[in-house]
Image 1 (cartoon, helix red, strand yellow):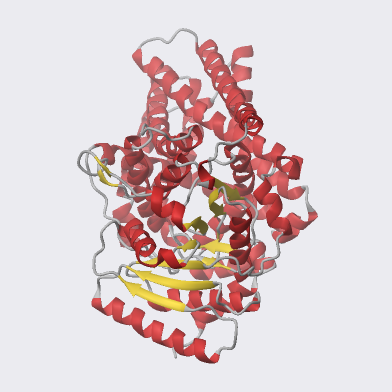
Image 2 (image 1 turned 90 degrees about the horizontal axis):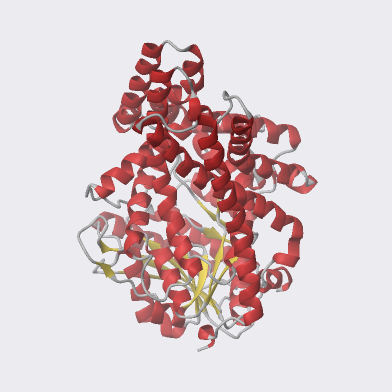
Length: 599
């Protein structure tokens, strides 16, 4: 089959050089940090100081990778088309028009979702496909329901009847809209998609996978189809779907932050991964025959949460597709593709707990035979991103204890309070790896008038970035502590329920915030008590953001969940993105559909 052909030796060698260009500086920086840390404190005086040193080195090694990833992405962005894949270069030239050479199904997998919201987005996408031209016969939209609740299922059927009636009178060029509800929910979303491939896959060449909160323009869909037609070795093309469309203050800040900070890391990812791309589970196009033949998921040995049915299935499906020889490509800058995100802190923490368990399950997948090095790194990076949280919590806790006992901040201050050349080197490297991601991202935007305008101009961008960073300083301890707890509970055998996500702008009540973030309040209280007991003004000042963030976490959840605060920020020009300053017609249509009275 076409996808199984190996890459030419010259291409494989170039890919190895790109990966070494990221890996070697990362390892060198991590080693330099470890050497400087050891030299700055001398021989560890007892197990406590040794533990703090080891934890510091582990945490900063992960930060070194993140820092170099952003620098790598900045360099790749500067090189432009010279480092882009052939698929990405083609995307800029291909007209988003149906060629008549293939048929595609856009599938929306749902489970107990808000039926009106789901079909509103489908109507917007159908209208966008009609605007993009053609007679609509090249692409069908499927709603694949796993809903078990009879009332929600009835709502889905009512919305289906409404959209089919609308389609009959809305003019030419609209795609067919089809609906199927499974009687058996085996395999969750992966099983839902798999059943579609078995039942309907023979009638289609490609499948665009969408989540209940996904939105994609007709032009983006047809461009993806053309790219698949022109690249027979490619089994999957993943787009970057940016969060948009929600109005709580928390959602608006997150939408702004993702637009500002994600592009360089995604550019780095596309540059080093080459054909070993990842699959993120939605807003991607797949070659149905290749996916159906190669992406079947195993049941992991052992009991849940680490064994049993694979929950975060998309990365694994992508790894299996790549194992079969198919290329997986990423389009870092394809416009017209969006998703939604949790609109408040408590819902975000709930999603993080689910994702933590799903990613840790990949410990049983990463060693499977035949996976490529790139696929193993995608799996490993997901695991490490969560394992880093307990390392950070342990470092901060033990580092604070050590500072109380010794009267010296030591490694807790990253060398900033030390003396001598080793401490200076440690401070410089630590500040660099911690600050580079955000500084480089901000600089990348400021260098381009077009990118600055997308964020509302320089003044609004800088004000928004400063406020976002201030909030992040308070939120980081909460997220880190929560993820550390999720890691511990997963290894302890606690199974997390994968319930339907709440996607609407939702105001969090005080009772819920205090109950769900009680661990943050306890940890913050213990830290504050320890600082008072120590009586060290410098230590208290240094750890104050951590203590304040933990103690204020319920208030942060409640206040940032307010949509009126989000609207007020927008009126003042804060946390703007291109989806505000140059809003796509599809986003406008979806917003109008949400505010329209029910028919």
